Length: 196
Ligand code: UP5
Ligand code: MG
View (cartoon, rainbow, N blue to C red):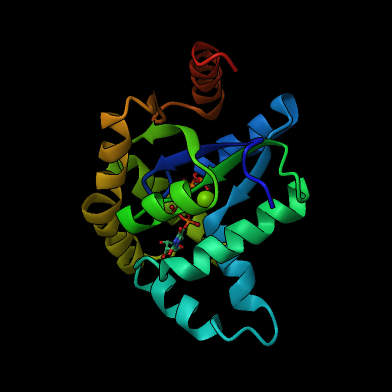
């Protein structure tokens, strides 16, 4: 597995800021491969015979960050799967890294990220979106109690990651409070600003 031709863009933002929605919209037009760390963890949790199922379930309900070894291995496997051993292509990784140790290890051992797209939203709006989605999503963490814990983890643990990349001049911030199409438009302008 060679990482020299692999170009990674991290997509970060609070729970419900629109990471998944916006990544899905970018895939077709730009030919990005989209990986969601949360989706990979939920898939592993449901995989028959997984030794991590219970652990992942517990962390997700509590809004805690699953030990990095698990998440990074899942991401690395998914990158290999989608890009092949040469790892040629651009990958959008949504919802990762959300803790400093993950950021450092991934950049060092898998593939250094090009930049970070940060979706900026208020807790009030994110709460509304997640409660609404919770009516049908079946996600174990789309309830008021888990959402509160996810917000707290985001502020305490994940914002320092964004600040770390900000110091390196790697963060592109986009307001994600408005409607989906408007946010998409602003993301595309921001990507253009980065030569993509
Ligand atoms: N919606 C989206 N955009 C909208 C807009 N502009 N206007 C109106 N509505 C909008 O959107 C959420 C909802 O809002 C949807 O119903 C959508 O239609 C609507 P979505 O695009 O899903 O937002 P997203 O930011 O992806 O929200 P998500 O809930 O997925 O964010 P989280 O970061 O909380 O979830 P994730 O799946 O990344 O992680 C879940 C858990 O996994 C974490 O809490 C953690 O326990 C664990 N995890 C790790 O441990 N390590 C990792 O590296 C990653 C995850
Ligand atoms: Mg998501």
